[in-house]
Image (cartoon, rainbow, N blue to C red; front, side, top):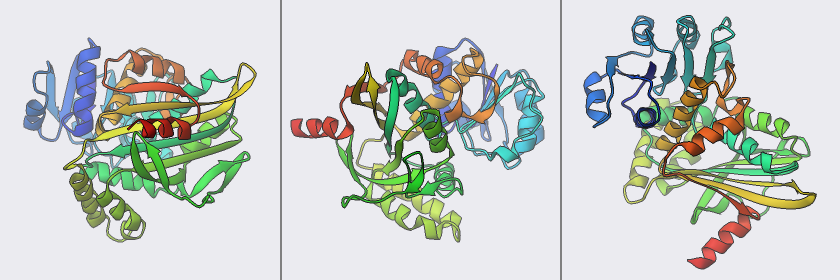
Length: 363
């Protein structure tokens, strides 16, 4: 059995939908409000719905009974160390969409169990896509990666996003230059980029996942950008660095309200655009990968569901690590590509600027 905590939420519903369609394994859907779970799943054949509280270990123990894999699509638990210990000693693998501090995970996880965290779009898929894409190259030199999104944030999602944005391991306005971390220097046109036929504002960042990718690919240069769509959302984020530490509840509420307002008259989306410069058949070439999905919550749900399947099929190794550092990016992407979704994954010849100049000229 596969247990999905937070299965009635925006991310959890998509995880349940994919696993119900793609797996024969029975599902146990957990939520604080079981009536909400019943109502939210529609026509899905969910065999087991249970009330569960992610911060109550006795509730977790009851929920994980008979579960081979447990995935948490709710908030990061308050006591991650005890929860991961309890799940692992139940003989279960544990997957968390949120980013858990490695020091707050039980140190004595059995060797044959997995505790995989950060199993969402970013971090998570953002670490897998460039490593998978790099397989097309004999040698990789430079990488430029953008994550673009427009979507409604629940208060939990808003909190997780702000925590990740301002986490001590996330270095804003930094890039990888000549094999080391260096300050980002604007070229006179800062923060503006055209992706998916939209003019967006981008923010350079560098985190532990970026460092892992840079070292794994032996990059000379690497740039990572977060781009968020929506005028109201951008206004909140411009001051969030100062407001969030002093008034987190109000900042979370403001971001929640802003994303709701921005999506009122526009279509949600989420995706990646990644350019790699390197060597293919002894020629110096640029290629661009684009992956577009329906919404941020659904892209996170897709990534989480693929992680569950990859663990169940033993396609990625056991252990304790963030998803972006999983040891088999190729196997992960094989599963993602076989799942029937609305996502569009394409590889284009040439750099990002040529791809979107060409599209822009066609409009």
